[in-house]
Image (cartoon, rainbow, N blue to C red; front, side, top):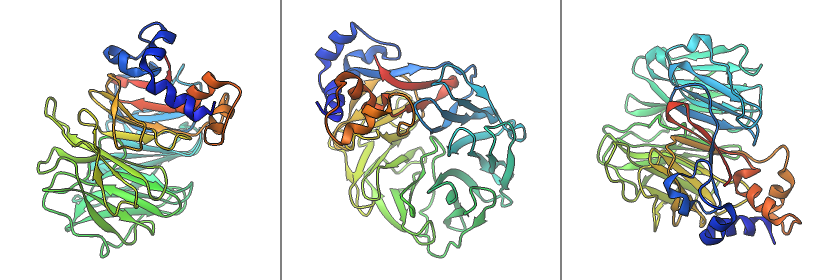
Length: 390
């Protein structure tokens, strides 16, 4: 059986999956009947910081960042965490982090004026360099993304009526503000949400997308030239209020993307909290069956082209059809999610998920569904989970 088909089978057959695991596994929560064979296994971090920044390097290595200037790193699958927080970031909100490997990472702190800073490490967090400090009190940086280990962007809420974009071409060592004349004008009240590090995302060597909210419409902006020129499209998710909009984006390639969001206020309904595109974001369609509540983070599962995860304070949802329909997976509270392709033990079966049959059906199925590929989630009270078979 193809590994990809086995993984989808684990999700599609709740009765068989429940019988196989004999009840709810770690992290399954009250939605065990919907976990369908996989769920989040919590990995204690030893901190109570809210972790909204996450970068999955592999199944064993991940970085998280968040409140109180916190940066943590694991290299053993979450069994232990090293506190590698930048000393100069104490008290700052590190809402986004992008890691290239176990040693190199770039972290962004948010806030008005000088609270927005970018830090960089090349030695696993033993030392950090402050690469950028925002000199403009009107700017408020929310998210960053990298196309490769050299080229990256960061985005600020509008300044003089347009979103501001920072660019680096040396791995984050230096940054410069890009011209704003080819950026669409912002709507009144429009801004980005620094909720999951996913309001600015990239795919391939030049394409990048920016998510907005807080205005009369939720929108997604797209650039095909690393932020020099932009187009904008309305997104069919809740809008019309400062608490509503697109909170997270994910693109599996240049064409196919997912948007999630809604109303982040506790207890507020968020119908139509998911949307999909298959044309690089030129148009967006609402999910036929959206996530069941507000979702702040979303990620594609490697090697399973139609499978993705969406997370929020009330749980995790999974799609098996590229965002058209979503179903409950878990009820753990998370703010952000990220998946990495496997680079270590057990990767062989997962890597074959797009290519055909493997000998180890069950193991391959689990690996393909982010178990071998390395899907991680992070959120409040230092909570971090890794997707595993129940």
